[in-house]
Length: 285
Image 1 (cartoon, helix red, strand yellow):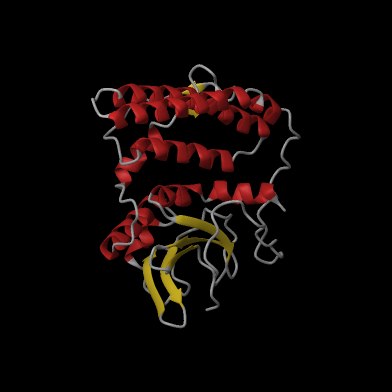
Image 2 (image 1 turned 90 degrees about the horizontal axis):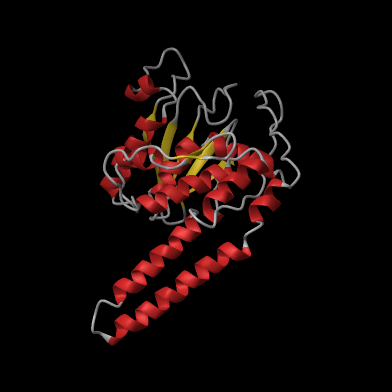
């Protein structure tokens, strides 16, 4: 299993997959006709294919095409669906007129905005998060310098829906795309640091919620308080159990550099099995 190459693919496509996952959509990366594509499962059993130009093939690296083509598809015994939602790729033939989106090229922002608008009109967007709000939460997510020190930007804009879950999702995507165990250890430090780490803060959150539950005369308030206090203790126990996880991660054998992007004339390795949520079976078109 070529885990390093999968991590590199995920990193190169994170500007597409991260905002879509924040909207509650499951993403997968597959190899299409001549380049890697992003497949997005939708609640109505249809799916999106977000693809660079496939014919003719391009020599640009994965995740950085000259343009994107987005289609919504479904192929089953009951119904067949194919609609083009977005096309910023240059025309395959000079005689064809470019689509209006062609001016955006490979930019991700107008691509995500077009998907947002289309899926929202169809009622297929699980979490409706404005793109500007999503950009705010990503901007407010702590970053790490070369030594693993935290650099927290100032708060910007309005707080989006599920901002804290989105921030952790962004941290998870960075872990998926990290290129070394040292970087992975630095990200673990953000979660496991015993004083200011995420688990410690989460323990404080449950403790505060336990105290809030006591502010009632209902018997269930005291029962809920006990449950929340127990959750706080379990979270803090995780910090102790995983106390050495960061050091152990840092001591692991360095990752092998991901292979260089191959030209269209060179056979491209198949995408290895992945550990992310499983996409529905792909039907032959």
